[in-house]
Amino acid sequence: MNPAHTLFLSAPAAAELIQRHGIAQTLRGMRDAIAEDFGRWADFDKSARVANHSAQGVIELMPIADDRLYSFKYVNGHPDNTRLGLSTVMAFGVLADVATGTPLLLSELTLTTALRTAATSALAAQTLARPGSRVMALIGNGAQSEFQALAFQHLVGISTLRVFDLDRAATDKLVANLAGSGLHIVVCASAADAVRGADIVTTLTADKTNATIVTPDMLEPGMHINGVGGDCPGKTELHAEVLRRASVFVEYTPQTRVEGDIQQMPADFAVTELHDVLAGREPGRTHASQITVFDSVGFALEDYSALRFMHGLAVAQGMGTTVSLIPDLADPKNLFGALRAPAAAAGLRLAA
Image (cartoon, rainbow, N blue to C red):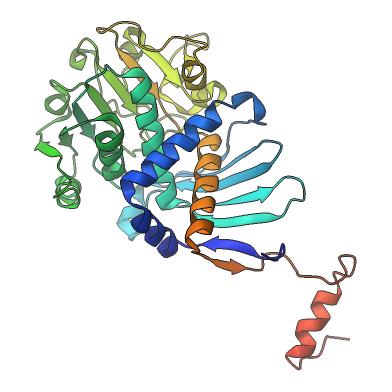
């Protein structure tokens, strides 16, 4: 491909690519890519995401690179967007060649983020939850809920979902979308009802303010809690006592201390980074009655993994189009010439 041409994966093209490959296979592929890249943790130039907050929400940039590829994601989080007919979370991203700076891929990341978040959740649960976990509570049945449900079904072995959302329409949507999936879905009257008897609890609320979802009285021995809600400063889903009673695992500590549930804890509150568990440097679950928490806020390395996976899949399937993000120059030093050639072809005159 011409280095001046960038592969473009639109939202419709990404949806078709995922459908062709299969959702379960896509989740597995992303899980494997994330696990592989977490295993190379030291190879990456890492930083917490850059966030611009407003009263309505947040817009963030998430950059990361190793010595071969650079990626970034633009992503927002606006909880009230659904009232305007817009998604709460919208994203796009770029994968670029470090050696030249050439953008290789420009891609939608709204669908892809939902998939990579679910794949990361499943990877953490495979590492931290009790073996043989079959029942999951899913609290918050919005845009990302089906992705989490399917990831836990296909990658972890969950067979029963206990679901709850304050918005019953969201729950009805989830039930309809998962019809025929093979999951046994139990609609519950409250968060406490949903959590009862669950091996794994996944919280997926989007409220920008502190809204405690899981309280100490809901805890059961051996429970694994997957905290995935749209995190930001001031946003928590788990009661502080839940964190005190649990072993807490995070992606990238500097970012999670600002945005995750552990923001309500002292600065020296002990956490373990997931990559250390995956590499065997730190223990994960050590006994059956241990309560574990994955305080997930989403980290740029997961987007890097997802972008390189989708890029490889698109190339293999011959999907996507090309766009000219940068000028195609016969003489790289003659950038001004790019203004003359299109103008002449169109019969236009440059201003004197």
